[in-house]
Image 1 (tube, rainbow, N blue to C red):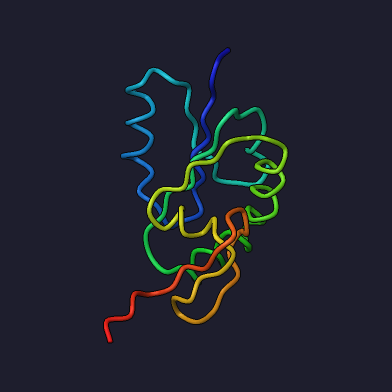
Image 2 (image 1 turned 45 degrees about the horizontal axis):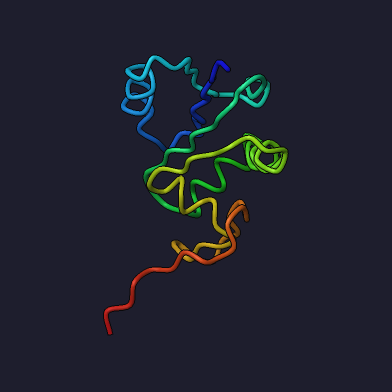
Length: 114
């Protein structure tokens, strides 16, 4: 079986490093930058750096949130890296309470050092 990995570009990730790592493994890889580019991938990667709230807003504006949920619920595996992993959760509290993708039940909260 041929694998085809899609790296989701929603404006909050280090795509180049992830892209080069997948290429090094000799796996077909493309960057997904618009909602019409999600077809024919066997795996997805959601990288991310920055604020939970801003990243979710960016996913929603591009309508990637809905598409990601549909694909993952249909059986396409997804790997979240850094903030991307956090976005898979139900909710995040960075910059105010924000709903996540809800693919992993749980909340992402800041550590308390009290």
